[in-house]
Image (cartoon, rainbow, N blue to C red):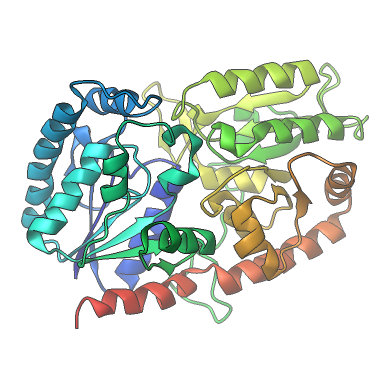
Length: 434
């Protein structure tokens, strides 16, 4: 089949874009063709259609979002502006389906979280008008996010996020969302967890071995401004409040008291907390708050998102851009203290790169990941003395660290590989060809 992936953006290092790329790769391996349609496309994206108005940062979309959420009193122009942009987008989406002869469309989070109401409305109308088969890949629903609870569009949320259509199948990424969707909307779904390209024990030419430090990435620590003795604590997430990054700062602050002879002599910080993903999706206030907290706690916080992208490259000013995967081989420890996650991309990446990690026991971790037997430093909303001690032990005892990360890697390979995704996705795609 000719399969189209669509979202507000399919570029960069956000979870939806990264997971879409994994699905696209597995879809190719299953013998299908892949095309993209979004408001932003990465430099290495498949062929497709770029529609700037599909991006959630477009000025018209921002106005609609600001008017739809945060108040129950609707702006008098809100409905007409939603309808106008919906009609404009529908024309372009129909052109995408026609020009690329799309057999099946996979909306990535389009129908799950209302970041772009007209885009979801437009795709719903396209599916209704054409009968085009579709699989909604739902990463996180609007009822899971506090900022969408107060709104002036409850009828749209009920009908479109997500819609219940005969030609639309739903996939969720965890068992909690599966149960919630059934309870709230009476909609059945298939739970397919996020994955990573863990190598096949038997070996496969399709497998991607973990990238190590090479000639390109060898100077990454220097680019960040680290010294030889610094302990790199990696925070590989976007900078939004639900990531709980204040807990990472707390861990670093407490670890600093346990490493009196490590670090740069002229600085009070012994660990360096490095954030690789961008802030801004929900404003910059949270980043500024974290920077103040880190300064007060004597933690060296490096926000270096401008050095990283989904692929290696060169910035307009000539600076070297590193891939996200270049950061992991340089890291000593990973922090993943999220309060809420649809699944946990960065956690799988950490396991794949054989790194120890601290993880907050967010609900999906408790339901779908932790019970599988992963050996991680676990916390419950605060950094306990035991968690600090465990992290310190892993940073100072290489043999225990190796044993732990090897155990986690094998579990990740068993449960969250591309082969596991193909086993779930293959029959679903086949069902549309019968």
